[in-house]
Image (tube, rainbow, N blue to C red; front, side):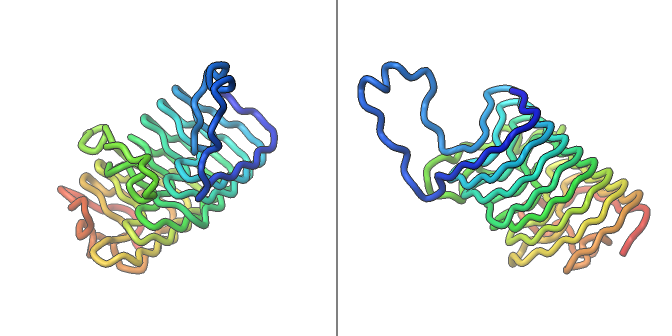
Length: 236
């Protein structure tokens, strides 16, 4: 699925899906969804203006999600952006004041853009868990990449601000920061701003946390204990 430009506003969070008549049901080829933008395979968005208010994932793909621009305002009871494979964000402005998890995929790569995320669980996650487990709407499914060693988070640029009750950044694999500005605040008891199971490498950019986890001093106290992690490069 490819979206190059346009304007989209949707809202179904906290409301039920209207029931179809038997005639409508027999004529419809697609089922109702409480997701905002949904693709069974890969999804690419190159620009546009989006205001999404959804009960389930606001942006969801069964394959990769690639976003190269756009103006986004997202409120969701589940993930703001979810891919069953890779999430790649190259540019765009994302205001996400309400979500369960902000960005989730088997891997997450951020090259630029502005992300402002307030999450009731993790801000950026490749650590697994239940997709939709925080909604109470019954959308949850066991995350198939929960224990996949190919999970990683790579940040090459961008302005990323996260306030979370879970881990602000949670990687089941490695975390590499080569650039950008990260401001991370974890308010959850027993969680950390940065939590990785693999190596943490800081080559460039600025990282600020409220718990010192950018220096490795309090990492691994969350649900995914850090194993063999290291921090290199610039430290705040």
